[in-house]
Length: 143
Image (cartoon, rainbow, N blue to C red; front, side, top):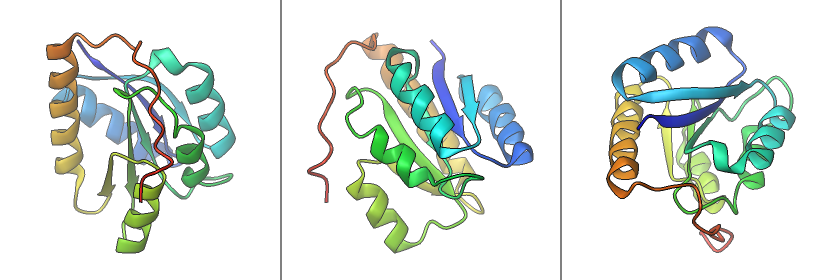
C-alpha cells in the first residue's frame, strides 16, 4: 500500500525532485501539491480521508507552512505531518512540535532521514491495514 502524500512546497524544482525520490525509494504516491498556505489548508482539510502524510515547507509563496500545520492539528491519529525546511533550527523545531508536527527535516542534510521516515510510516500503515477512519487527535496540548 503506497503512502498517500500531499506536498506543500512552492519551489517547483525541489517539489518535483522530492516527489521523484520518494516515489522511487519509499513507496510514496503524491496525491497533490500546493504552493501556498491557503491551497494547502483548503485541500488537506477538505480531503481529510485522502492522505496519509503531508510534507510541508515553512516558507511559501503566500503565507506560511505554520498556518497549514495549525489547520491540520486535529487530523486523524494515523495521519502524519512533517516539515521539510532549510530553517530547521531548534526554535523552529520547538514551534513545530507545539503545532503537533510528527517530525522536522532539514532540506540540506536530512533527506535520507525523510525517506527513512516515509518507509517506516508506510510499513506501519500497511501492517495495521489502517483505513483513514480513526478519530482525530487533539494535538493542541503538545508542548
